[in-house]
Image (tube, rainbow, N blue to C red; front, side, top):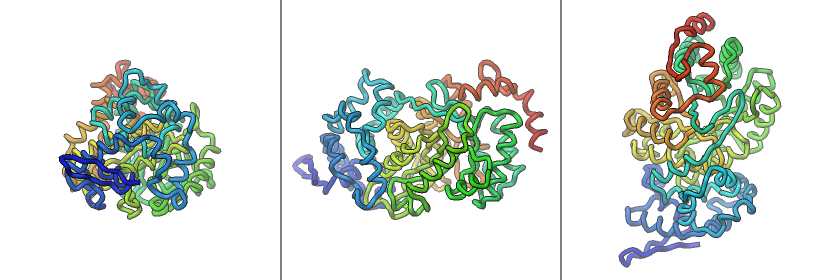
Length: 458
């Protein structure tokens, strides 16, 4: 179906819904690279005005990627809840934006929409929103998950302690874990990106974290971010796997390039569930995503990168994950050129994920050749804190020495908790108090805990 809009006697035509969504997207370098972005600001405005008048029902009738050839499309359409959709079925995209921003729309109302909304619908409405709109609506969305602690409660803010090392050296990783724990980091997960994906290396890292967790009775979860097939192998070998990790994307072809499909994820999900290692809940999956992954794999099918990203959230939603985060600036300036584009993309991703019922975090990051710096990341961190983001990364000095990119530090999380009055996950906060790492007001003390941790690990 073609769409069009006239501005100053100039008619702008859009071939189909896919083209319209791409042209309506705020400017980003990836869509320009793909040759699908609006050519001018005026064309973008024409597309946004046209998109505002598209009925939400149209997304049920016009698949961006054919149902017959893409299993992500099939998942999206087959899981759509028509009864839950009924209260908003009469709205256009623009009317849906106004509805979401209404004072009467609260957390429970949005939680009931989890299976009513298709990713393409939330991607569409995000394209009509200013940054403050994305923040205002996301802030209403409370998504709570549990494994050994409770993540996502309003008024709380968690971190992934990310103690990566370029050679997976146990002492280097241990030093980073001590550093992070003594700064109150790690309630979302202690998660390592392994330099080597061999089962033996990954198993050693899992056992390192698990020994520390058990020794000090830390109410958190561990994850080594290996490929899902490695994790499955380790589950079968009896390794201490808490969470199963996988990078995912919004098209079948992109996921195939990652060496995965929905059947494989389902197998791993069921295997991880069967371990019953959680104490307060059974959310066992950890997914990472990022705008531009489908374009970099040449598997975007002409769909803009932000809509592809939202489609990845349909994959995550199927498996009740504990954690989902968009690694927003990691792929590079070819996809998100500068700080402004990274900030906008992160707010979009967080909004779309939360509206689809996901426990969204953000890796607030950039590569060293992007037009961005830590001031941009400070701005984004603060905006996401206001928006109710579930968690961010905690990395020594904000500089990942294995992945070679810039993210957020342990100190950054302390800053956000302090200025916004946020607390760690409640079970983890009680542990910090018990260990003498923080006091009743959340201030660091360190004195009692440092020696015990160092003696154990070294």
